[in-house]
Image (tube, rainbow, N blue to C red):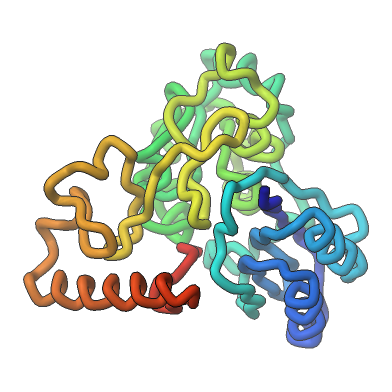
Length: 305
């Protein structure tokens, strides 16, 4: 059984470049794989490995400036969901593109998973899913507003174009693990929204703690690794990722005539040319050859971050 850890921390790093190689070396020494992002605003990512390996890397991360009490979400996978370990330097650990957004100054009020239902059931509360359209497509909370954004960068413009429709309502927001809500709640507070809330620990914590029979969650939660989708109890749902368009494919669509492993899915088949499909088929052939040799084919792009 593989331990999968999703983590983030907003904390000032004076020189994130200096942290990169020691962190990468700690991960590789521990046999841990995944993707971690470092920026001046902090750290974000998902890693996977053995219990001992994960504990060793978390110990290294807790020693980073401001990370002593970092929190993380754990789940499991039957197989290693990453092909390699990457530690990358970025301008933002989650890209919103608004210069003055700073979650270390102020964020919305955290709502524990067990208190979430009472909040979102209130008539004066509007619930907004801050994730991207392809994530929302496979699962979301009952009654949540879908901004239909293609990336998190689109959220500020969407809000400014739609703010009036929410009137004087209180705003409750959620995302996969909580990081996008740290920025989006700070953004809304700066935009003058007086009462902003967000689900503490995100969907992952909700699915871990709230029993399925009591849940208001419908469908699967998209995750940025080879599990693709998870549900209540953080169980894998059997979704796959289309290698052509990077959208999740539901288990029931794997038999669809437009689905071809590594080549196309019902969401993108009509947009692809025959030349596109030929190129993707060759890539898939190389992936299968590499797999047969027990090697990693880097063109597979194991995550969608």
